[in-house]
Length: 203
Image (cartoon, rainbow, N blue to C red; front, side, top):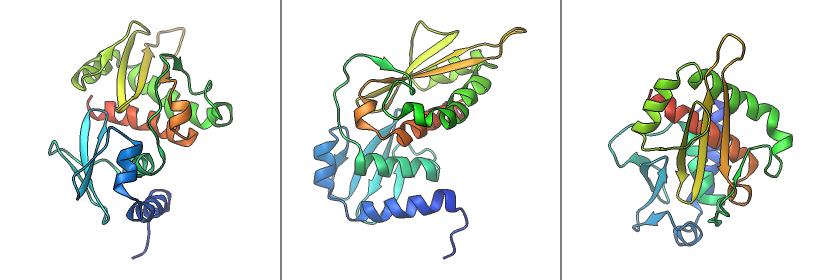
């Protein structure tokens, strides 16, 4: 079959093949928040649970809702294959403050921070309602700020400031400090992207 969307389908196919060769016992030993019942691995992403069959890949949402887009499925495969449980030291880090953050900051700013600012900083009340709908915890920062659990053990905050006549809307994303060790920098970028897209789908 001809691959039409190389940007998403080629990396997905690569990690799908890697996943087929993975050992579920090794995955669940490395990631305590993942369960294996002999047929499917259960993962939690932003409060939703997904069952992923192994060795032949298929994904289904346990809440009966839509399955995530292909880029998010690739992120989940990378999470299962490469991520590891790392204890949170209690600190929050910006993307720039983590290893390789300076190198990736330009694409990150456009893909995550600017997008969040103009998606939610222009609709603060809608952002607040969507975050509450997702069960996020409010934090006392920004014009509206909430804390989200990306996957078990990994926390994110999204803070937004409403624009006015003098200043454009603004946003900041904070990561629990264990992201620095548990996730590759490109996955931290994708995590921000997924967070924004998921909130946007709840507006």
